[in-house]
Length: 97
Image (tube, rainbow, N blue to C red; front, side, top):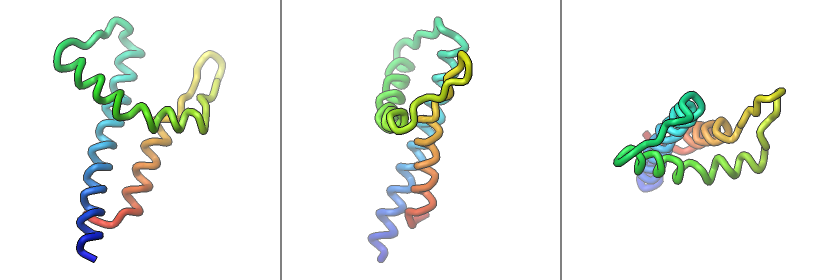
């Protein structure tokens, strides 16, 4: 039983880190919306690329399941929210610290 608890703890830590990366994606998306001329350079460019590479697959999967909702000229993308919600649900299910 201890091995299950240890594996669950490792998975929970990985999910928490992934949630922080998802929040980083959220901040980056808003920076790009508010400042179209934002072009990261150097180490920041590598970090931005890492954040998008890690978060794109689940967000795109959820976008296929539930496409963005159009409200006039605004499109509400639920992919990020569904990815975050699924991480929170997994955190509630997986045993561990």
